[in-house]
Image (cartoon, rainbow over all chains, first blue to last red; front, side, top):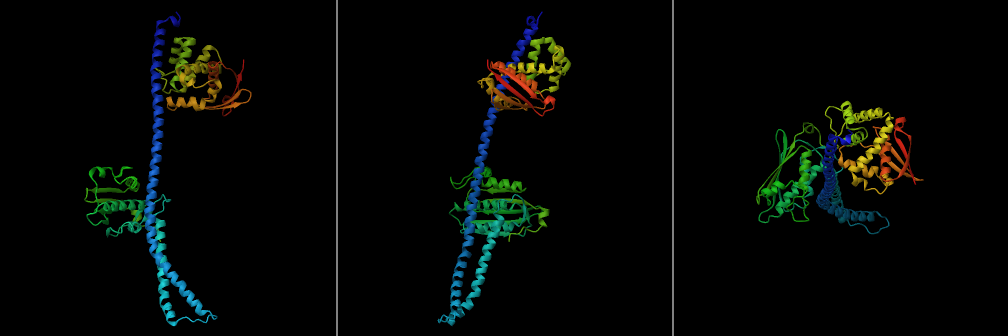
Length: 311
Length: 181
């Protein structure tokens, strides 16, 4: 009996065909799954690109705030430096004229006396103004640098003061109360620390800005426990309801009007803090203000190290 | 080695030698109660042992058996995946699409299929140079697959295989000559 006449062979062929059909179904599903997976991956890539673009926008927005602060900080000394230099030029012209033998016009003695008295003060003020600008630029270079990926030993108070300095034009009508204790150095990426502080203070300001029935107030408190340095930022602004509080760290969630907030600020803050083993707690009630508490772990190495130079 | 290759080998052995021979081969060269499922992977040593045994039974050089299996394999795969073969108009487009189309489709279906590296280049005078490299060194199977494809598209071909991994080269070079009637 040949195979083709063998009933077992016929049954074998039938079973084999059945198995092939089942495997074909499996392959069709696998192919569909693969294609859907590819599509999903493309969509994820697109979302990631859009997220990057939003983060970039957020950075540009922060940069705008920094630029406004720096411009304001530099403008004041620049104004009197310019005025002083103009006076110095005028004095120099008078003095040079008096020294010129060909010039018959002699300088007035009273004027000479005035120049004699005013000149050292003018030079000293100008020098001080220039030093102030140099100081601002140095701080800016230190805290606003985004190229560095490493951590540095930083005095948190310096970073806080610098952020407040940059935000001064914005915070003109806000009462800032500070309770600053002497705390150890921390190990943090300087650019990112600046981003965290700016975001939190700007949020506090914006929460106050929408409230019109009381004067705006932001309290900054820096304390230390055995294991942590605690920075607390409390505002008396509009506060948040439970739902908003629960979503405040979600990327792209914002309660600000369209065009005024990207909604990624606090998500970036959380990401940065996690990368530095810090924790953040937020308490808030509608119309009762918000309290943001950040715990920076005390790094035994950083405590004994000297701060990276910012001057 | 993917189970589908064993499935086609089974088809060939059963068709040529009968069911009992396949059972004997399995008993001899595969673990007890082995079943080959198309999407799963199995030790390639099982395939090589079975093919070697078939060559001995048929008193044929193993390379010829592997080549014949390759040709049979093309038909087996083509009948299971007609939609893939239908993407090609002729033999040349299929050969030139091995890397970008066929291997892509295989990757959709099978996890880590361990495909060979194949690169085709069109040459003047109706020739295609096909560079083949694989740690499995199944270049004769590739030759058989090409003959199977040529048969499918009714294209007469001749293959010269002077550079070969079996003679110490790091890759094989198959020069396919397309012949007109």
